[in-house]
Length: 160
Image (spheres, one colour):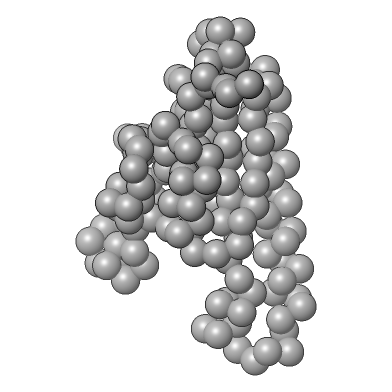
């Protein structure tokens, strides 16, 4: 039987901005009417784990490959655990967390296509023009390459 649930894909990494976007999604799109929303939405949380080889390519010799890979797996596990905890604490039942290896831009675009997502939610790191030009913007890339609505959640700046 085909599901009529809308699919929300949320991209997460190890940043505060990323988890803010997940929390925002849970608080504003899913939790307010959790019993109703659990029947309307399926939440897919995606973490793009970069390849150890791509890290080593920029940082040093190949003899550290196992150590880098272990660190990346540990980080991915911590992200998955945190995402599970956030969903369970808000009584969200229909969700899954996936770790996919690759460039976050490509991983998120593929996840949207594979899950036939209705909406993609990504956080904004708030990079300026120079950093964005050098590092690239995942949210900008996704807005131009996915065929669904993209919601970019910005973490509010704290005024001091």
